[in-house]
Length: 172
Ligand code: ADP
Ligand code: MG
Image (cartoon, rainbow, N blue to C red; front, side, top):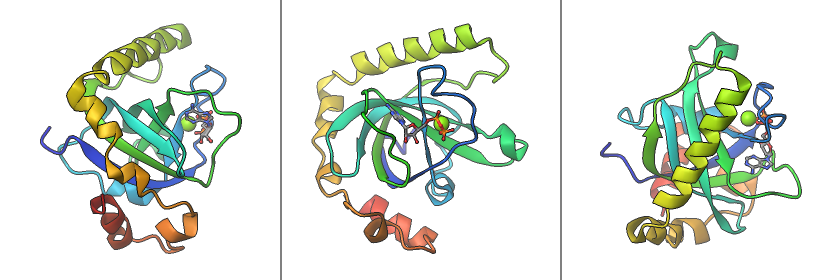
């Protein structure tokens, strides 16, 4: 995938109650403008990379890009599980991520919960290992993360159009 590593950031919105948190694996959903700007060669599947909420620390992450059953699979979603235990939810905050590599294709969402959890836990282990490679560790230090805007209003105007998110993504 020639677009990797891919940097993007945007507001965390509510998902559609697929119960990730109940499974112990909460996934933060990006607003539509971020999803719509994904380059064409970044397809559905599971990715690993680095993530940061607001201006806080940068952690490892796994991300699922998939078709959203809530919208009869006509709309894609980008869901990031940050490999860190947060004290509080961070809806409405700016999540900055760099997608570094691809792990595997999407699984059908009718998989058994136990099988799904096992698959995600193995994704997390793979992400942790791959991100320790020197070329991947380097991306954690990218000034894209230190330049993260602290306020929603600075990063995403109310009409959050493609042009503004493009500027933000290329601004690292
Ligand atoms: P939703 O359907 O709204 O996405 P989830 O059950 O998937 O609900 O929970 C996601 C929310 O949990 C995120 O938007 C974020 O506010 C919060 N959260 C807490 N810890 C994490 C984490 N480690 N990774 C991702 N999101 C987290
Ligand atoms: Mg979610």
